[in-house]
Image 1 (tube, rainbow, N blue to C red):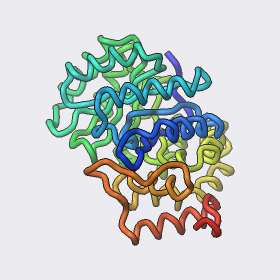
Image 2: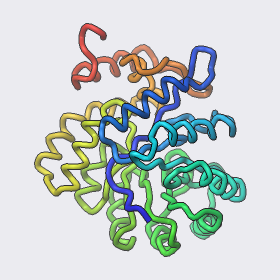
Image 3: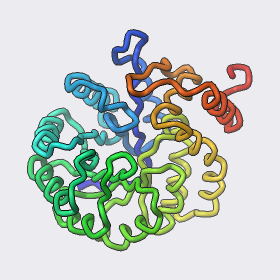
Length: 298
């Protein structure tokens, strides 16, 4: 199984004015990530507005990602839901599309117990030979994968890591302590990437790298090399950009920022809507101050 370390970009799904997937813009975004030096890409996650995609659209996004990447970096495809049988079937079918691994969010809304979470992931793992990264984001799903449950899941051979987006640094430290060596503990919050890596995390599945793939890759590469003094300087420079991506619900701000950069249209699918005027102004100003957007274009 691959060691999933470094920066994985949680890809935005661009739409046209008519509401269709903008395949040309999406392919360009993926190519920009590869050129920027990220370590892997993640289509069909939260940032990709996946709950609003049809099964056919989701399959096309995965296929297009694999096609554009062309083996240069791994593709970690999102597969998740609250029906275990449906998710397991989706994992089985996604394996056929040439991806390198699967990112599977915890069941949302139905709030399973810890035993239910264990059995959920065990059932998914039995239907695919691909490596699986557990995605723990209790603020969105209503349930939390506890460190002891991750420690149990780590004994399943193809469950190889976690995207830890609880925002709870104590829990993150406990996870690093609980899981065996080689189990990837990836941050799910850009701003906590460096703190998590300082205690044994191995990278991030990032929203900010949609905008600055090269700079996020540099930050994580420095931390992986143990150069935390230089990594702190990168973190300080990027922190305002990391934070502004969550001034409203993800992916509203990052898609607005990409549109300001001319990389996609500012189109969303309900219930996602464009940011407020106040938020848009803050996003634009942050891009300028971070050196991402020129004053002339702003």
